[in-house]
Length: 228
Image (cartoon, rainbow, N blue to C red; front, side):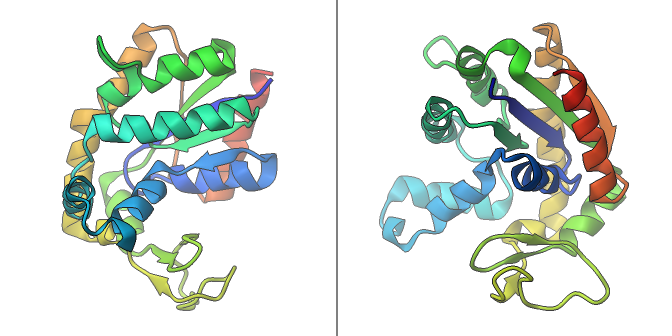
């Protein structure tokens, strides 16, 4: 049976890296909603769309995008993946209580995925790192300007993507002042999701995100395999 994995944690905790590893090693589809939304708001074809340009201003300032707008995009794509029987991994999404649980008029993503995949096939992880680690990792991180692959800091790191050789760039989100704002946003708007998941009986796996990514990944796999 296909699985859904949701990985949470502060900015820079390694959510995206662990999702990429699940994609590369175990064949999960990594639904990177942040990357998808960035593509939408930066698409030149949308330059005259007032709604999308409003969302772009929020994106570039580090403020979470409008929940109802995000939910519609994410749920449509998740439905396509569920219909295809894909294992699915989210990194840091859904980001708000509304996106996760909806309201009287909108079904949240958690209920949607529970119906599509089954409760026992949903797995939740939280990667814990210090604020110092969060700021350092993000401010030193680069991404590929073509394929979007993240490139972690190393003293011998080149300025070109090791996969496709395109130039690397720093995301607008990865400046120290923006990172601090994103940390506050996480505590105020995303962390409460975990409390509600617990209240609904879901198990949350808390892992130390400070070690090297491959070490964290071993612990992720161990938890997933223990549920098989």
